[in-house]
Length: 265
Image 1 (spheres, one colour):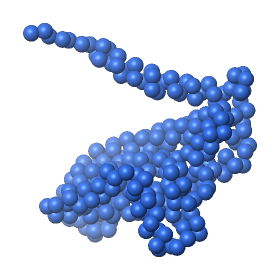
Image 2 (image 1 turned 180 degrees about the vertical axis):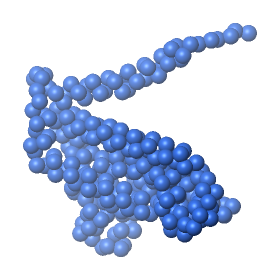
Image 3 (image 1 turned 180 degrees about the horizontal axis):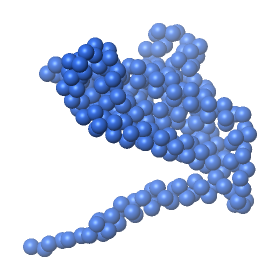
Image 4 (image 1 turned 135 degrees about the vertical axis):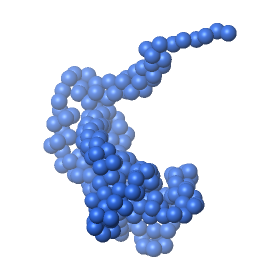
C-alpha cells in the first residue's frame, strides 16, 4: 500500500494557483486599466474624473440610498421572522425556514418576472414607482440572506441567560434589549454585509422592474459597453475599495460583539 504524505505547503499549491489565475491576474488587469489612458500611459485622470463627474457621484449616492433602504427593510422583516422561528417550540420550524429558502432555488429571472406581474396588478403602470419597485425587488431577492444568519445566531443562544435576566427583575422587553439583541449582533452584521453590498451593484432588478436609473453595477457595465475600459476599471476599483472598507469595519464590529457575547456567556 502506497502511503502519500503531503506537507501543508504542497497542499496549498493548487489554491495558490487558483488565486493567482482567477483573483490576482484579473485584479492586476483592472489596476492597469484604471491608472492608464488610451495610450497606455500612467495617469490619475480616471480617479479625478470619478470625483469631479456629477453623474458618477450621483450614481454612487443613489446606490448607497438603494442599498441602505433595502438593508433596513430586509432587517425589519427578517429579524422578527428569525426571532419567531428560533424561539418557537414547533417541531417542524425547519420546514418553515425552508419556505424562505426555497425561492433561492428558482431561477432569478423567473422570480423577478413573477414579482413584476404581481406589482403590475397592484400598481398598473410600474413606471410611476421606480424606486419603490426597486426596493421591493431587492428585498425579495436578498431577504433569505438576512434571515439565515440571524436565525442561526438566535437558535444557538443560551436561553438560560434570558431566564436569568427575568429572574433578576427584567421584563420581557428589557431582557430582549439587554440580552437577546446584543448576543444576536453577529448575525445582524453578517446579514447586513450580505445584503448591503450586493444591493449596490445588482442592476438586473432595476432593468426588469422598469427603473431606468443607474446604480454602480449598471454604471460600470455602461462604461465597458462603450469600450471605456479605463473609466470602468477605475469605478470598479473604487467600488472594490468601498466593499473592502465596509467588510473591514463590519468584520471588526462582529468580532467585538462576539467577544462581548463570550463575556456574557
